[in-house]
Image (tube, rainbow, N blue to C red; front, top):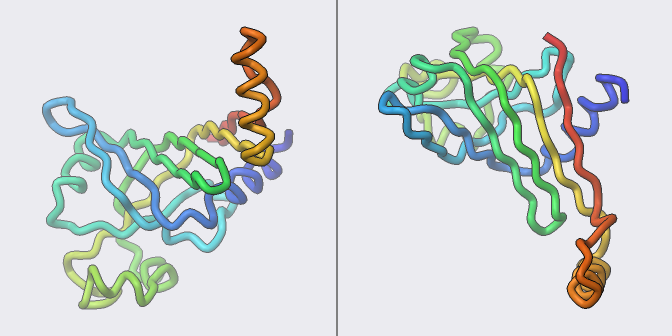
Length: 167
């Protein structure tokens, strides 16, 4: 599959999921996840996802110490799940912040795009893995019941794939 096709497929899976769980590493090695809102309206050729974060947060300290992050997207109603690995960093481009700004963000950053507590976090995607079950719930249940009766693993329950972004 061409990288543009993979990028489009990845975006198609995550675009309607409001929140991602962003995972960073604490100083003591523990991993910590927190819900974040993806600010993108599309996934462009830069392969980046964008988030707003508080400059006072422990999360920002984690990111500054270790830029390797993971993002988890889940849409259980559609049986769509995506795990993203990437490199995160802070982007101080005020024009980009303004371009990504939403009224929803104002609840967290009442000072608007120039709020001194606002940090824009860019996550450059390096790898993603997805699971997309397209069969109906009834079909899934039938295939699982059949597998239980026959002692075989259920098959053809959607697709799973990987997307590797170019450096």
